[in-house]
Length: 286
Image 1 (cartoon, rainbow, N blue to C red):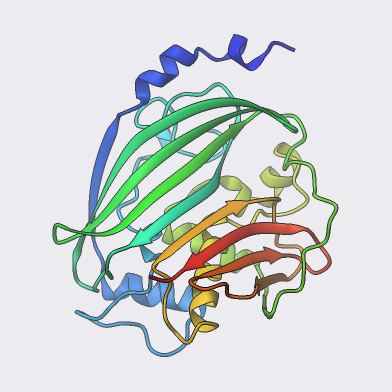
Image 2 (tube, helix red, strand yellow):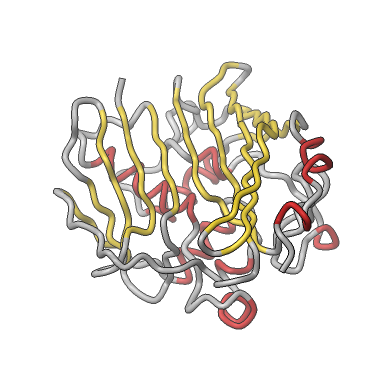
């Protein structure tokens, strides 16, 4: 099999570095209510002028394209904003976020995105290409969220990656949720994410080789963020980072775990019962 640098024209792909895109959307009461219901958050959803839950920006100002511009896997076809990397599978690998304020219901939210880095690697499951995208989330012209999103493109070998053998630790705080197909479908709808591994079981199992539907990375991150808020006196983190470690599926419960808070930081993770860590995260407070 040819090496990754023989299959991928690195110099051509790096021409995408610096490419930018901006989109806008109004944060409506209806969207806030749907986000609130999907995550089963406590209390009443926010109304006009009130603070929206953090990480709702994942649902805002997503590019809207017609079905003729979708790839076979449901993703937006490559080659416009994101590079057309010749590796078949794309997933959200990690994210780093910092908050300088909250979004308010009724505000116009602007999402400015820039391709920051492209890097090729050889991983334990085959060839990998990482694309870093920086996002600035602004409300009425004021910066509210700075985000670095890391996408990974991988080869077709070993679908889903090799499972980690070590079971996840229990943590000091735990909460169990059921990642039902309805939850996954609702979150995909909220984020306008048409990647078929999250809602199309025949595609996920027969084409991509997963045992079930894949729980979205940003959904796990959002669940962990609000779990961190609930277990830290209701104060939302000022910074949050997360990284996918192994796939999580709809076949079993998903456990949200929090470790011991060390000063301003607290580690968090998700796992299936007796399974390895699916997502590792860290919340921090100023």
